[in-house]
Amino acid sequence: MRPRTHTCGELNVNDINKDVCLHGWVKSWRDHGGLIFIDLRDRYGVTQIVFNPKINAAVYEQARNLRTEFVILIAGVVNSRPSGMVNKNLSTGEIEVAAQTLEILNAAKTPPFEISDDIEVNEELKLQYRYLDLRRSKLQSNLIFRGRLYKVVRDYLAAQNFLEIETPYLMKSTPEGARDFLVPSRNYKGKFYALPQSPQTYKQILMVAGFDRYFQIVKCFRDEDLRKDRQPEFTQIDIEMSFVAESDVMLVAENLVRRIYTELLKQELTEKPFPVITYDQALLEYGSDKPDLRFELKIQNLTGIFKQTDFKPLAAAVKNPDGIVAGIGVADSGQLSRKKIDQYTDYVKSLGAGGLIWLRVHANDLEGSTVKFLKIEEKNALIKTFSRTPEGIIFILAGAYEQTLLTMGELRLRLGNDLELFDRNQDRFLWVVEFPMLEFEENEKRWMARHHPFTSPQPTDLDKLETAPQKVKARAYDLVMNGTEIAGGSIRIHNIEVQKRVFRMLKISDREAEQKFGFLLNALQYGAPPHGGIAFGFDRLVMLLTRSSSLRDVIAFPKTTSALSLMDGAPDIVDEVQLKELGLKLLDKD
Image 1 (cartoon, rainbow, N blue to C red):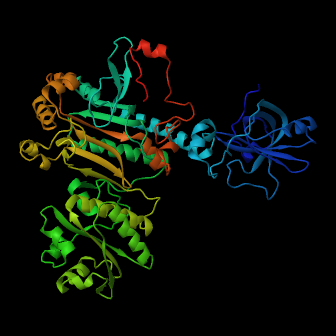
Image 2 (image 1 turned 90 degrees about the horizontal axis):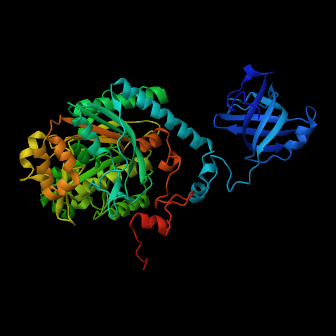
């Protein structure tokens, strides 16, 4: 087989009259009566090939047998395309190759779907024939971007004196929130390894060992219910540092993002530094712990306006110590019909709200069916609060503090999307800090770690651990991009006594702590430095940067939302011999 001289995305007018040899797949085939044209594709691009019987009649006849996805070799001469036939959408659009020889390297069956970015194909069919789906230029572009991102991350962190250190995939099962994937041991029957949900304990031990700057681009595994933006196995950029405060870790992560934009997107992120807001502020102003800053539309706390209200739906929330009246005001140029508003009402009810109050602002007055229940001073205060939207609609929710704000946050996002309040090509970043350290699990009647049990509480909140756990703030931080969390981390607990107190708060007994985390607790007693870190969701980051709609578009071989690999049939049964070697026996299905 002759070696190729060029790729299918390389030739241009500077190559005219050159003898070339190209390899690739037949993307399309056209017989124009006397001439046969094909588009030859590889991962670098597409080149038009023309077969002319006047150049080589035998090769022309051979070309009549070509079909899409045949793998071929052609040799010929580069010509300029005829006048009026230039394709400005292709880098090779000004030239074509007049074929002199043709070798069919491999024929192909007719694919079950067309290899095209524009075609609508059942998702399961595409995953079954993933090797064909991956020939699409969009997916190839995404994976090429992903590969380049690996390099940018490694180059940047290496330049910052980070060491890339691998941690084990076969580890001890530890409770970290989701279920572990378990791996039975053949040598120690009845015992199991777990696949890591993250390298959390290992990277902390690396800090104890004196490797003060560690990173790893690592596979993680969680056996949890899936959704569109989750996979059972995923990749993260894992970073850990010693002798640092929150700002040190955040600066490294923020500068990594800036480097990615400069190197890969050729853009400068002008907002320096990224905004920082507390969790409490994010919840109150945006109804979310991952606010989308691409549009303003802040939530307003209206509780003070209605302190003396006679309107029962609002009065109940005002009298509740844990209640709030919250509102959003939007300008309306006719998009928000009564039917649309009714849809918003149904939407917030589906999220648990009792109902949605709405008022139309017009000519410095309020209109709507609920206006008659409001006092004049309440109306005036609402008009003043929403003076930036003098002609628009005010939406009001009332109820329990957190649930009401979270529901209003979802309505905010729906309004932002429906009213096209943001530029989808704009990217906005921010840091959210000072998360609650603990959250109460009603079903289990105990406090749970909001992040993980190794997150350090704020030093000023240590005395509240046992007396007021709901008020304890964590030294945690999340990096948010366009309303999506792309990275999260914390300063870790490096003092064994504090770690034991946190375990007790989480109802992890001393015995369980020793069984699950004894190796880490032991390490903390041998001079553990103050340390902290952060992890980026690598797949999610690629998805956002490539403007893809699903994680499956940026992972070479993804699973379905039910964790199936349709291409190779995993998970699958294993034979009795394998089970016996592991000391396992399957229970009857019934």
